[in-house]
Every structure is written in structure tokens, then in C-alpha cells.
Image (cartoon, rainbow, N blue to C red):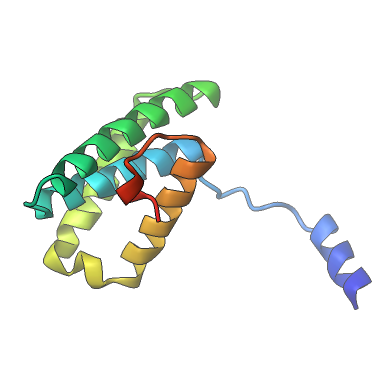
Length: 121
């Protein structure tokens, strides 16, 4: 059975719809930017602001490394920000929110993006 699964995995084409890492970073920056809008306590508000800036900068750097046009990141980040804003105050209760927080933390760790330790579980 394992042999058939392995053979199928090797023969089937890889997904072509995976987004670039730079887009994920830009989307994480958007999430942190929107989260910062809803947080009113310091220093958490400042940590989220800094995280949004760091993720956006990392997205630009990664986009260049990928050979992509960095201008596309504005559209990617804006679209994701709008999606989070449209969810309103309920965004933190969505499963998608938790998944994105986990993804962003993992991305930051993997690419050595220096977020404040409170942002990384």
C-alpha cells in the first residue's frame, strides 16, 4: 500500500496554486495591522504595530529574493486587510484567525523575523 501511495505522490503534479512566501508575509502584516486597530492597551498595541511593520519589510525583502515585483504586495496586503476588517469584532472568534496567527508565528520563526517574544508562543 505504501508503495502505491509513494508512487502516486511522485507521479502526480505538484500544486501550482501555492502562493509565494512573500505574499504570506504581507498577509501576516495585514493581520497584525488590523489586530493593532482593535487593541488599546500598551505595550501590546506597540508590539502589533512593530510586528506589522517587520512583516511588511520581510515581505518586500522576500519578494525581491523571489524575483517578484514588490508592488504586488500592496494589493495582496490590502485585500487581506479588507477581508479581516470585513469580519469586524468577530474575527478573533473565527477558526481562520487562529490558523493565521499560528501560520504567522511559524513564518516569523522560520524566516528569523524578530517579533517581540509575546507575539511568538
